Length: 255
Image 1 (cartoon, rainbow, N blue to C red):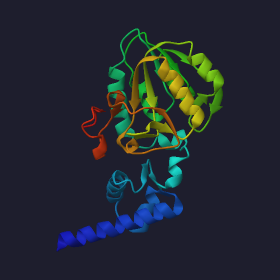
Image 2 (image 1 turned 135 degrees about the vertical axis):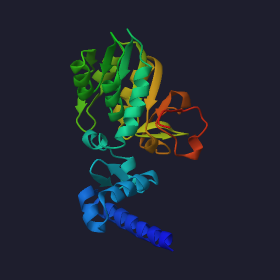
Image 3 (image 1 turned 120 degrees about the horizontal axis):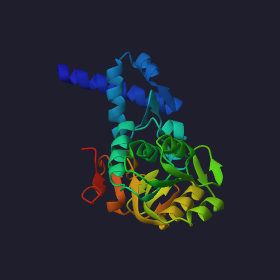
Image 4 (image 1 turned 180 degrees about the horizontal axis):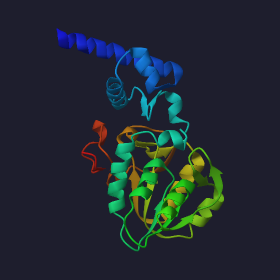
């Protein structure tokens, strides 16, 4: 009986959370605590569970609504830096272990790839990127770094456009690491921005090996533009939470 009461209270609390997030689009952790009267630890546990059920997007310090628009617009990079941080760091650490000394690599703009720039330990690596923040991180760590110029997209901290593609075509990379907004079995890796998709394709074409860094929230998500087919052995994730993607050969590093 006590267990049933607990479950009912929890379900009611989570409904309040989801309703508030959907109504206001974003609600802070403090506001959710005030709204429900629950402890911070309870609310954090609720957000983890609700994010796993894809009822909201868990952010650092709060939660954001999931809606159909999320498939066609891009969250800004500051917002995405607070999503699934530990998962991205695990993915980045494994990706970094693949980089050999004296190699030439490409690092795509993104938050999982930003954490890769933090995790790199190989020596004498030359790195090309289309992200200013990733370039700054790499130079601070004394890596030889080349920034691909072009039109700058502030939302994703990425250079895009014709100039960017022309410069990328002059390089040959031992390997490249890429972010994605979604992975669909039929449509592959997708992004909301056509120009970003074209740049990703151009860079991938210059890589001997390609790796896509994608936390578990990216699976069974399809955004506007496909830039790469679904190739399981190229994908690095924390864990698989969708049955259609299980036992496909995707590298899981978070278990």
